Length: 191
Image (tube, rainbow, N blue to C red):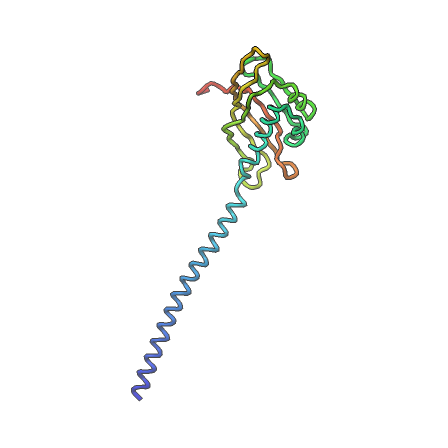
C-alpha cells in the first residue's frame, strides 16, 4: 500500500513538473509569436504610413534636365501637368524674368534654350503634404548646376549655379511637375 502512495505522489509531482514545463514553454512560445506578430504589424504600418520615395519626384527632375540638354519636347506631356508653370526668376538680371504656362509654351521654352554641356538638379530637399503615404503634393528645393555650351565657335563654356523651387502633384496615380522656378535669389542670411 505504501508503494502505491509513493507511486501516486511521484506521479503527482511528475505531472506538476510537466505542467510547469508546458506552462513555461507555452508562455515562451506565446511571447515569441506575439513579438513576431507585433513586428509584422509595425512593419506593415511603417510601410503604409511613410511618404512616397523621394525618387517619385527626383526622377522627373532628372528627366527635365535631360530634356533641357537635348531640347527634347516629347517629355513635356509626360512630366508636366497640363497647366504647369515654368519660371526663370532671373535673379542676376532683375526685370528679365520669364514665365511659360502649359504644354505649348513649355515646349517652346525647351526649343529655345541655349545648349548645355551638362545640367543637373542637385541636393533635392523634398517636403510631402501630407507627410505620409496619402501624400498628394510635394515641394522641392534644389540647386541648378551645369555648364552652358558656348554660343559661338569662339565663345567659352559658362558654369551655371542657381536655386530652384519645384512643386508636384499626384494626378491619376502619377506624379507631375506643377511648377518649376529656377534662377531664384535667396534672401540674405539672417533675414
